[in-house]
Length: 503
Image 1: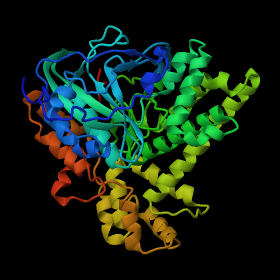
Image 2 (image 1 turned 90 degrees about the vertical axis):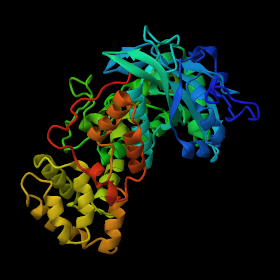
Image 3 (image 1 turned 45 degrees about the vertical axis):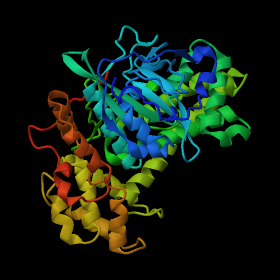
């Protein structure tokens, strides 16, 4: 065997210091399972910066990454397992899902003292595979790598990409594709569906065990709360409301907001048919499996509330021994979700147009009128706000903004009202424009650029576009003039109208 798959004498043998709390939960929470070996693993991407953040031995992991990140070589201290969970998928409840192609290797304590999961995706069948092969194709693996790291650079809570390995063997979907394994890092992989798994079985004891585990791991301040499980519901709702508001701020469409894809930690997870909106339209859907627009861009806040309602149902038995009282408490918590979302969204959108915390009566109308004009004029969402930041420095930048509209000049009346409003904000025009550029990215993972990079890698074994795209997206708020082509919306014929699940 080569060095890549057979760690040599001289390494300390423990490039990762695991501390596996989830594996100490009752057996019903998971199934022990080892990754299935692959034929010819090759490390195609490794995130050294993240490895350092996690306190890992980056040199050893990179040297032997093909073996470690394919599952061919066991990482010392790992306790591989597949997690059990249920979930509502497009509104239909499935009582048992679980990790069908993902294997949790274990947990590490990062340099900031936070517990983080390390998981392989595409590492073979598990007891939850449901007739699936447990494998992943290279394209979806590279997509998740690109988008999860882009989300991190945008400042949005997300799972992270540690590595991608090409397996050297095919997977069979609608065509034969090269296989791959993805190494994902998360604060945890506990989902709303994890609670639903036990609640559907009326297993209140383990709902409580799971809730206590989540409080210990993610919300330790709640331990002293008078109603810790109600406080947990409120805390998860607030994190999800904040997360979705941030998604909307950058035009992100998750594409498959099932309850098994909603983390209790408040991280974005599972980048299958996700996409970033080009032209602004709240009805935008890219996912090929979302035929009725359930998870359209503008529906995401409502789906977030719907998912929180499912979590509330799963926690009912913990809220009160009096069922009527428990339902009342749950309904009140669910009802507060939209208030929380509106507060988070207001902060996001006000920052995007240069307004501070002091509100005026006409501010909501100003925001609404801008969004209506962008929709009617079929303007690119990302570029419109980025050029609005330039316009905050003076009218000389107005033409570049108006050029994005079907009717140049359609924003002129609005710009006059906006500038009049900005005169009542503190700070200089230059400082305001700088602040706006910090929240309005110049670069997002443009769908056509992502697909271009994936096609080069999958069809031709050329990873140069993948590498270049990741480099650009690591600095989304910088202008990067040399890479201006990555900021340009798709031309006619380049538009991506459908994205696909990675299974």
